[in-house]
Image (tube, rainbow, N blue to C red; front, side, top):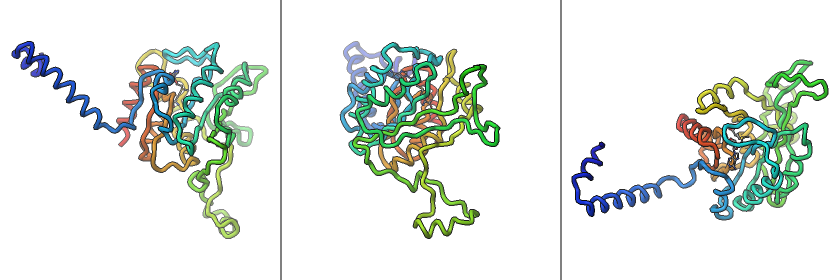
Length: 296
Ligand SMILES: C[S@@+](CC[C@H](N)C(=O)[O-])C[C@H]1O[C@@H](n2cnc3c(N)ncnc32)[C@H](O)[C@@H]1O
């Protein structure tokens, strides 16, 4: 029995009750002092969204389940009502984003249902401002650089890209071209001339992002997750970073309704931003919290 237990045991039942009530009030009042906007909730995102006020968050960067039968721990990635469910989620997400907010929605490509991703995107109530391709595996001079899963198909090409849909309320929200751009290489002969001509010392980013999938890093990350099924679909930190830079958000809250291993929160924390998110699986949720405590 702990010291508190021994002291409580020595008191009369009435005093014990008073002590318990006092403890509850103490915990509750101190919880209020915790930063409100640093939280990953172990819950269904729609349940969480039901209680979230309008215009709470600045940017949403997220990757929902793709409905491709990916083997998650708890979640079954084969919903019959996938498109309807996604529509409900994005209506709620747009509601809780500020009117000048950004929604970056990463969706995989399915050979079996190739148009599902477009159906999901079509049902987002905001306007598609940028249609970005995330090229995960890059082919250079006949060699594949980056990660690909070995596959045996005789009819399909290996899948080397995913969608990244960038939505804003009216499709005309300013983005940060400089922060998300690439500085001119000093050794590049035309850099100075280009700088003079364009008045800027960076190349604006394009809508095709070459970010390799880090298989080793992903394995290392997933190894520490409890339970049988390690997380199968972690996106790279650079991917989240680039979305953040396009949005230009320097102060505010990033939201991710499908946190998985917490990558979105990790990047938010690295950039000194607040984050809120949900993850339905208790092992992934626990892992995301542990991962966050390791970041200074
Ligand atoms: C594609 S993964 C996200 C991975 C994440 N971006 C990362 O880097 O780790 C989708 C996640 O959504 C979770 N999920 C599925 N249904 C959910 C729901 N209704 N609410 C919250 N999370 C859910 C799954 O458990 C899974 O971890």
